[in-house]
Amino acid sequence: MVNWEAAHPDVQWTQAAWEGMGLSSPIHACIKIDDKYVPDQGFKRSRSWFFCTASGADKAGLNANQLPTFNTEDVVFLCSMGRGAQPSFEE
Image (cartoon, rainbow, N blue to C red; front, side, top):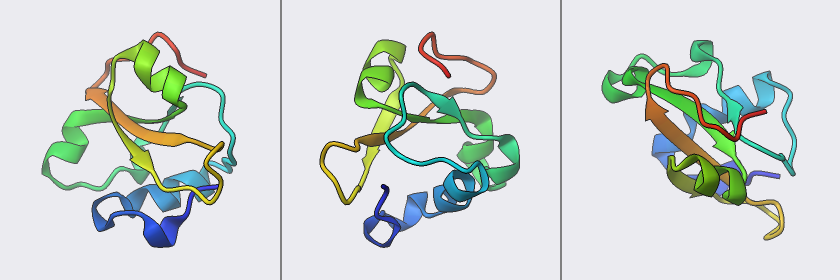
């Protein structure tokens, strides 16, 4: 489970996406964040955003930042790539 209280303020917007999409960890691939959750703030709208596993982020070659979790086994990354691009390791 993601520890939202410990997440950096720049990624707090992803909590609404995680909860709104009904996700829970562990996840098993890269899951695209619906555009309706992406803030209309400069560069954020120029990217496609995903929640990924470590393996998913690595295989997809995405820009990735690890989100804090309560359990070290439930690794979740916030990843992005150019708008409209799709990782090869997607759910």
